[in-house]
Image (tube, rainbow, N blue to C red):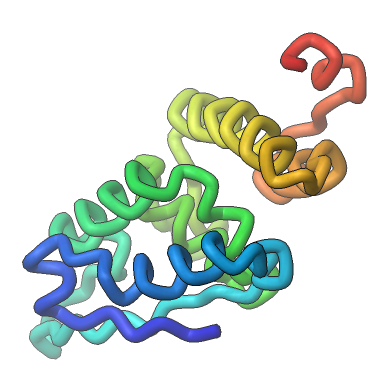
Length: 156
């Protein structure tokens, strides 16, 4: 499922394009079927001489911060294979781009982000009746973190 996000949505911090779908999925109990299906098409015109990536534009990052505050478990819905999860992380975690090494996240900020998402997703998935240890471990692994099974015993 692709959701179009316009420049007006970003400037107005308008989450309605996302909220309409997510709230419908939650109310109908169909949220589980949307796992890793969501992506965003961001229409944010830039000057041809503007070299910034979308994740370097403060207004877009602020929109993502608001999205994360409203739906802190939304990473469950993002298309991980299509790169949407990586883009989401780049919007929320300080990073630098390197020509040869690609994106380099601030290690401490990334660790805080990962652990916060581990706690949020573990609780949210359990409340949804989806049991999420393997899902959460997969998310952490995509960002370079290995979570032992014993860790999940601690947080239950």
